[in-house]
Length: 488
Image (tube, rainbow, N blue to C red; front, side, top):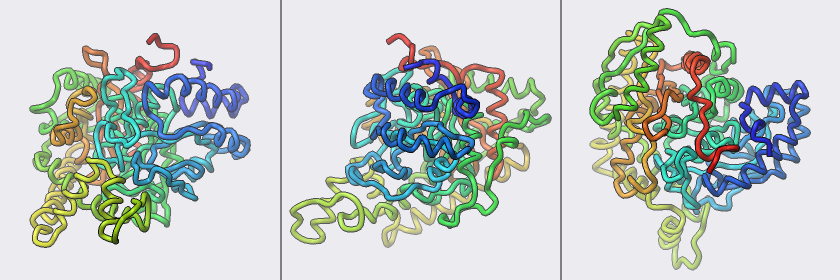
């Protein structure tokens, strides 16, 4: 294993392979060796098969694409032909899709090769990656702490150099929150800019696939490959392609940056606040006009999100009944017993909790009081962002209120777990882009993430701002405890 090879980012790997300075097969072997040594420490994988990657490598190298020969593992609710898509659930433990998702199809066309699937909260329902039916994920910075969720395996694997980058999904913060807790960069794109075809749905009006990598530059490269219209997704934006030139443009002069007063109040850790303040000061130093803005309906965001998300989950997961998809219980006496036994065996506690909450919110006599009210609140929340963006170009916030919490600390208190996404789920409700990037560490050495949000369609501006920050700082290249060459 070469530790130096595993420090290379996606753009560096692609360039070195293209110039002949790097042997793609040797790189695959280095990842295989390191993952053999470290996968049990992070718990980041649900499936690994380097033979598939080696078999596909010659065709990938011949593609001439921007990712020719770049190896990658993908979150385990995005279809990758040849691998199981389990959603970290017993319900889909043996499901092998016969086709690629749109995003993996585009990565494959660009020359990437796939060697594994990454662990997560079951059906993307969670904020700690402790809800996996197989095993929990450990944060590479401190294995006793959570990596965040639901894309916790994705964030942990990127931070631990077990994959140079990946794709996650973000329904209420599931890319950005684990990116912050694991010290990497993660983009939640504008809703509709990346196809959801081949993504196992949690909440269809909120879900979005996005890139996760150590740098904004690598996120921009992946985003330029996966973004674009897809007729197989009815919500896909017809003019949604992206370019690296826009995503890596220099920092604009005279930017107006908003600080929402509601995001800097009670519950925010002082060390997180101070780290985000360094980003604020850096922006001001580079000529940005920083000013407070108001998002007055923020206090309703968590309740609104969990009503809409659970209602849509109840509808989406209805297909997993033992007949159409997934696990089928044995020895059921009749159809009703088959449904009950299949779902009792196939779904974990958090998924059952959310299905029941969503089913109740949609039930006769309660629909308007709960789901209907939540949709009206969503309109108000979106209106807050629309109003703020008439005053400023982007919004700067913390990504999470604290750094990584200990595994098991919040498992028995769902409300406290849900509040980990208090700064991220408004972005999904409004359908706007958001990016998390490292901006410091706390006194325990745990990473801190800052978040930028912009109007719909300004994903490239957020990437360029994060890239400009990373060109002058080194928080994104800091190494966690679980990393090649690090002492145990």
